[in-house]
Image (cartoon, rainbow, N blue to C red):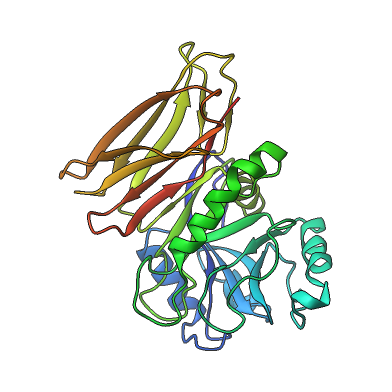
Length: 319
């Protein structure tokens, strides 16, 4: 597939399974068709401990990032950006002290390592490893709220990530959040997905942007937003970026479209600092003033009226 060599926002689902994975029944052709129907610009194929069938994917008119869901005995993680045919070892658990070496090998080769569905309620699904060493945390996996026994507890994953964010930023090594569908069956792809601000439409550029946190998570392509902070001198930082305020106040601004009758919350290291309702027409603007002295970062959540998540952002960092 030809790359679009331009800076832009690209929508992608980076946790996807074809019929090569246990419990999945989607052919590459069907996945590509569903990706286009869901408004996605790219996907990452993450078969369980198996490399994807690269020849089949290369023939499709879709940017496909090769990956693997590494299903260890005490947690799953995603290795994204693997070489064709590469398989990451998975036969170990937290007591074997083995995961760090495998993660480091993927990272040294330019790949991205994601802690997957850290609170999945089934054997081996709960992520027992520390996040240190991983690049990204999958805080939203599949439907936000569901009575299905295998669905991840996304509220718990988001809360855990949110609690560690201030500490990690202070230490200079924060891990961005991402969201993926973990699709195994028809109709699941893109719910949710990650919207990435990348320098170009290529695997390397997209993974670099995800690693940097220049991204936000959407329930569907019907939802769009912009989130930024500006100083009185018009210096600006968008999601995942740092804003040097020089001690001046900063205005944080969220514009959201496609979420009628919901609510917006802003979050800093002090917890929830702002809550505003959204109008019923599906378009809304929320602004809030703060300073680097009061807020090391600001991130946003947008929820439907029933409490389900519609979108959430990585932080804007204030200095």
